[in-house]
Amino acid sequence: WQQPEHPPHPGRPPHLRLVERLTEAFAAIGRKVGHALWTNEVRGGQPWRCYDDLDCHGLLPDERETVAAAVMVSTGAVTFDSREELAAQLRPDDPAAVERCRPLLRAAMRDFEATVPTKAALEERAATVREALVRVRRPDPAFTDEEIVRLAQALADTQVRDACLTTAVPPRSESSFAAERLWFELVRRTPEPERAAPATLLGYSAYQRGEGALANLAFDNALAADPGYLLAALLRRCLEHGIAPDTVRHLGCMGEVGPLVAPGPPGREGIP
Image (tube, rainbow, N blue to C red; front, side, top):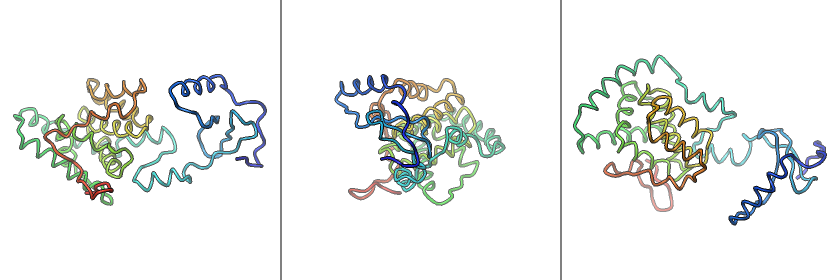
């Protein structure tokens, strides 16, 4: 495809040898590279050109007007124009609200640590998260400070947290994006160190659908809240080493918690 208003670039795009080596490496594992393109920046209006055909060139479209963007929005995904805009979504909307939650959460965690684990307590925490996953699908779901504290306390239970990992699968499903909206809300409103749990869940969800930038930011957020949070450290290490999402998909385990998202009719994803 060629746009007449954009004249051809002289010579080949940069990094040709790197592209050749990558093409050879993919071929060695049975993956054929269909088309190798170069652009200085992935942004609407930027010029692109092909490595194999010097007459193949053009301008990138506005990413917000592409079919891919429309599909993402239709499934409930939130898109961002830059890494900075993405990072801003993890910062508190109202720092004063976070401070209001802090003493409430400290008291709740003292109770949590002093309570002998029981099946009834586990079921109550799971029910708290399950109800929130239903509410977050509604227009403008509002959570009080007390509800944020109860959710943070529930996610401090590793059995509940591990069950929440299952909401990221299947990736890009309506239920996974709904769960992600809840994790975003909790990251913005939960004091540290308990913020590490929802931040890790957010990162895992992004990891599962291949959104490395969001996953990295979320894992960094989790470790800033609690430097010793092992699950966040493990997942970030996996991401850094290029481990495929399906390799860590088994980490989600419902155990005694049971499903957090209601099953739907055959051939269709369940919507609570």
